[in-house]
Amino acid sequence: MIDGPYYVLVLLGVLGAGLMAGVFCGFSTFVMRGLASLPPAQGVSAMNAINRAALTPVFMLVFAGSAVVCAMIAVVTFVVWPDDGKVALLLGSGLYLFGAFGLTVVANVPRNEALAKLEPGAPEAVSYWPVYVREWTFWNHVRTVAAAAAAVVYVLALS
Image (cartoon, rainbow, N blue to C red; front, side, top):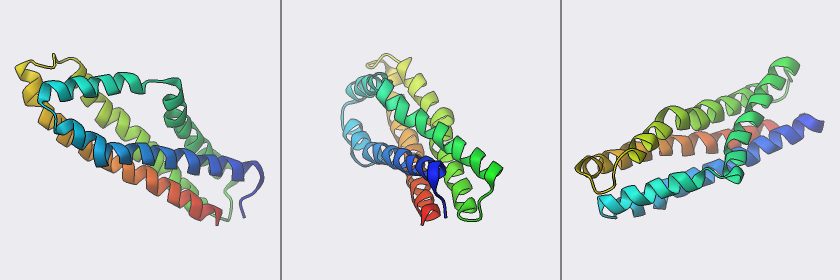
């Protein structure tokens, strides 16, 4: 059984991955749909404002802090190599680190940066907006599933 400080660490992993799954889910299920229903210039402006507003210490603490916690769980699991839950702990860490955090870096952030360079009413922005919404939302669905799965797998490791 996982106990002591290791239990607390995994519990923090559950909490962080679960919180991020909720954030991602909200974007996938209603935020992006709402933005997509706006005229392109308004959608581009709104998304750029959201992307700027997201870079708060609280959000970054949860998002990046969860990645740090998941990495710590993976390292401790390799070092201690517990009998209980080792596969689940490594799987949960991989799901969050690669499927949520990593995808953000390689899929969502580059699209955000490309969108930020466009003037909202310009023809390039108008033509890029539907592509951005479709691709960004697809990768966000993947992040949602990965973060939720990480939380579930961590919970299973604790049981």
